[in-house]
Length: 174
Image (cartoon, rainbow, N blue to C red; front, top):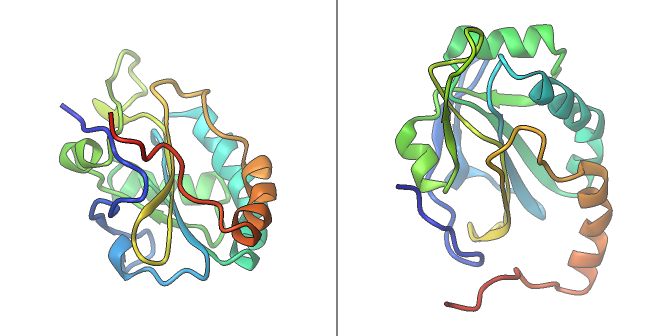
């Protein structure tokens, strides 16, 4: 069973291989403002293709706002490489090999394939902002492929959040 993550607590660990070589380690990130970890369903998902394309078009703006960014999926290296190549993801860091345990730790929904083109199991979308101290700031998790936050809207809120020292919300314990 997945867990419900609490804002303003330490982000779960995440250490994955990257397309093109190297390793992504969320604990080693040194963002100016936030680290953005975006979990996508995988190469089989046309909605992911469009969403990651939108991220690529805004990547420079996110980086100028002090973000480090990674997109991660349960795909193997070959499918992750195919996504980078076929979807023209350019210099977006793409990690692969997310495990069921990773999905559980990050509170993600996991689906089982019902179409031949889908992977046997895959995570549903999740988007997280992590502060430089490693604590969770923004948590957006969906169980459906088409329910994802608008990246332009999120980007437009960064100055307000920073200028007003806007705290992570949803921290009241139930």
